[in-house]
Length: 228
Ligand code: MG
Image 1 (cartoon, rainbow, N blue to C red):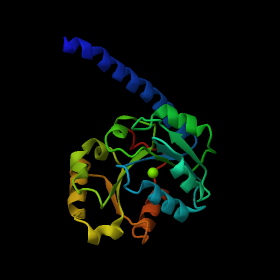
Image 2: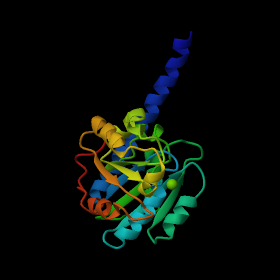
Image 3: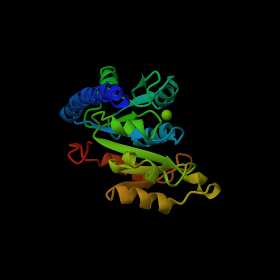
Image 4: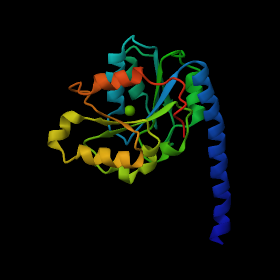
C-alpha cells in the first residue's frame, strides 16, 4: 500500500515547514524591531556568492552597519574569508543539510552584534532547489547566477527566481570566454518575476559593484514588499 506508507512522510514534512515558518516569523519580527535589512543570498554552488560578498563588504565599508551569517554544509572556510574584511561573521554549518533553516539563523543571530539600521547578509548553502522552500525570516531574497553556468537557470529553477528581489549575474569578466546569453537569462528571470532587479557584476574588475552597493544602501528597511 504505497499511498498509505507515504502519507506519514507528507505530514512530517508539513510539520517541519510549519515549525520553520514559526521561527522565521520571529526572525522577521526581530529584523523589523532592530531596523535590520536581512538578505538571503542564494545560488548554485560555485557561483561566487562569497567572492561577491567580500567585494561588497569592502565597498560598503563603514557606510552602514554590517554583519554576515555564512551557511555551508561543512567547514568555516567562507567565514574565515569574510572575517578578513573586518565585518562580524558567524559560520552556520548544516552538517549535511542542503539549505539553511530559520532556527539555525536564530542561533547565529545570538552570536553576532546586531547591525542596527544596516544590513545582515545570510549566505545560504549553494543549492538552487532546497533553500527556496525554507523561509529564514529574511527581508529580501537575492539570487546569484554566474556566467559560467547555463543561461537557462531561471527557467530550470523557477521557485528560486520568483521571489527574488534581485538577480545578480557574477563573473561577468569571463563572459567573452563562455557561451552565456545575458539577455536570455534576464528575459527568463523577468518572465517569472517582472519586478526583479538585475545587476551585471564582476568581483574581479569591479563591474557593476557600485550600482549593486547603491541599491543595497537604498533598500526599504520595512521589508513590506518582501517575504515568501
Ligand atoms: Mg560560499
